[in-house]
Each structure stands twice: as C-alpha cells, then as structure tokens.
Image 1 (cartoon, helix red, strand yellow):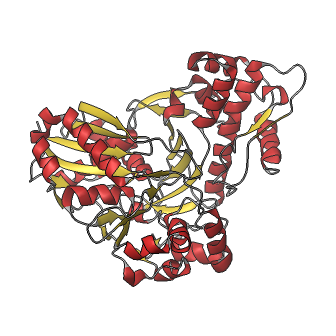
Image 2 (cartoon, rainbow, N blue to C red):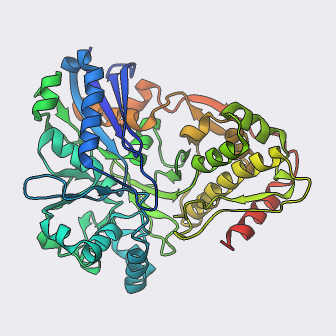
Length: 480
C-alpha cells in the first residue's frame, strides 16, 4: 500500500490524515491542539506548530515507513519571521490578529484601493501579511532588523521538513506583496509598508505539483518518515480545501468555522478595488477569488452559551422559529469584521420586543452569520465570478441542522454537504498524491470520490420572504 500524508495546520490545531493513494481510503488520522488565541492580538509561536505536527506523526508512526509524499496546508496570512539561526524572532501574528488595522488603513489611503488591486489583486485588510509587516516596522523595528526570513505558517513547516524556504502561489497570494496575475513579488508593495525587499529572504514560489525536496528533519525521520518521502509545495487552507473537494470552475464553496469563507475556482484573475473580494491564486495554476468574514460559528457559540443550552437544543430552538426571527436581527460583528473591513465594529441585536423568545434569538444568531456570508457571495458575483455548478457547504457549521437549513433557505439554492470531514487535510493529501504520481488533481479527486455527499434541499419558507430578511440585515449592518 502506497500512502501519502495531508497536514492541516490551522489556528486551533494540527490535523494529519494518512491516505491510500490508490483509492483515497483514510488509513489513520491524528490531531494536536495549538495554544488558544484571542483577537485582536492573536499570536502563536511557530515552534508550537512543529511540536504539534510531531505529536500527530507520533500517533500514526506505524504507517510512516509506507508514506511516499507529504503536503502541508496552513492558516493563511500569518507573519513568520526567522533570524540568522532560523529561529523565530517573535510569535507569529495570525490571520485574525487585527492590531495592524491602523497600518492597513494607512496603506490603503496611501496607495488607494485601485492601486493595490492592480499590484496584487487584493486590497490589504488587517488580516493580510503586509499589514503585519508594516505594524512590525513601526512598532518593533529592532525585531525587524533581526529578521532574515519572512514567510507564512505553512512555509515554516515546509522549512522544518526540508530545510528549503519555499511556498506556493496560493499562499503567496494572501501576503499582499505577491501578484497572482504576474506571478512575482511586488517590491513597491513592500516599500509602501516600510520594508526593504532586498533586506530579507522571501520564499521561492514553487510550481504547482512540483516536489520541493524530501523529508530531512532528524525528528521526523526518527519517527519513521523516509528520507525519500517527497514534500509537496503545500498551500493555504482554503486552496487545499478546494483540492479536497475536487472543485472546478463554476463551483462555489461556503465554509463556516471560526470564520466564514466563500470562494470559487476561476480561470481568470480578479481585482476588486473595494477590498471585499480577495484576488487569490489557487494551488493548481488557476485563481481563487475569496471573501472572508471574521465572525461565524463563534457568534452562535456565544449566543448558545448565553442561552445556557447545548448544541442540539440550540439547533432545535433556531429551527422552531420562523424565517426572519419575527423581526429580530443580529449583526454578528462581535470581534470587528473583515468583510466589510470594520475592525472596530461591534455586534448588535435589534428589533427586540417584550414578547421576544429564546427561539427568535437563536434563529437571529444563525441568520445573522448566514446573511453576512451571503453578502460576501454577492460580492464575488459582482466581481464577475461565475457560479453555475455545485454549492458546497463545509466547516463546523455544516454539522448544524440550523445552519444547513438557513443557508439553503436564504441562498435559495440546494447545498452539497461533502462526506469527507477534513477537507483541508484531504486536499493536502491530494496535492501530495499529484506530486507522487504526476496526475492532475481532478483525476485524483475522481478516483477518491471527493466532492460527494448528501444534498440539502431549499426548505419551504415559513416566515418572512428571503428578500426582506436580507434587506433588513443589510440595513442594520450598515450602521455598525
């Protein structure tokens, strides 16, 4: 049996899947937590990610001698800085660290949304790596002086595995200083952030599905990985999920976890000067226009906790209320927001009357998160992204009956809930398989049966019309 490993290094944990290249069977899996973070200042030591990965490999060590390729997918945007000894200069600032909001505003004001869209296909909000670099240049210049290498979380893990400073176009497209259209770093963007491009080593951009080397770290080899095991370029988490679903042009992916994302594979690059749509690249040589909301299931978790009920009770309450929650609207900007870019915004619950009920509150929380995500989908469509195929719903929110029903109802489209749970780790495994076999991802996805699952139909409406629910949400959100 020939095996590959897909790795998902996320904000909360590292997940590893050991997969049979032949038919995609999940042979083994493991998970190890990362230290918790709390926005707006959200940071982790990169060494913790490496320790978590080694812990996962130790759990599946009896399979490691049969592993012939490995790929790492990581949380996007995080800023990793290494010194001349390849040690982290400081904790990595993660994607959901919004302390660089002032620097983001300065960069956009200086260059303009149109300028940034032309440079890199995206307008850099506080999540983008370049704003964190600008923050570091202003707030910790001594730390920046000690920095030799600048990269992202998955770049760091690639470096640990192979001692090669390499990334892929999907990850690079989330930095704010690399252009998906031209395929090159943009020195002007770095200079705008107060950074000298010549002063640092940036990762080489690997071609899709090339091997960047083989496993060389002594700790990984001691656990049983072969020195002949190939290491794929890796990619960002959303790019990996697209591989793990077998997504093609015309398909839409909507994900609700700690954050919410919606993206589609496109044959053409996008550039949105409003900053709502990020013009990312994918991991297969195409493009992945994407929107991201900062607040998703953590909003419903907060409301569930306030109501003092468990997950099943929360779902039942939300489903028992009519569509529109009898006029109750929840704006879910609990920790500021990324789409739209309002880092200092707060949440709101409006339309409360003396006859308010617990089911209405639960329904309003779910619908608020869904409406925020669907406004992002509308931004994708306004940017010229064509959606005419499957609409996938993934992430922790897809396990909620209330989220499934509300998303199908308010989007007015049926949803596909994939049977594979860990789409990011599975997508990394797809990339590893492509590097090993030379096959295209669509071929691997078809053989492995990826993208299959069950369908959620659009429910019969009970309550307010969809247009009224979404319009009321937009009106309330505009005031935050």
